[in-house]
Length: 77
Image (cartoon, rainbow, N blue to C red; front, side, top):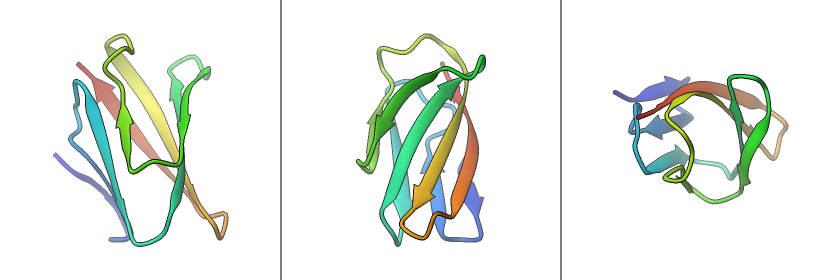
């Protein structure tokens, strides 16, 4: 399943077990939060390695250089 926002940003695979891929025409700053709101990962890379994170639900905030924010619910198996 692929999450899409206005065809500008895609995040896959979701659910994931190891690598989360961000597809976007513009660079994105990625911040991943656990369900309690704690920041667990921050990156400017297009691939996020979530292998070492516990299984559960996370919120992924993506922010581009125009300060537009996209939020995705990510499920880690």
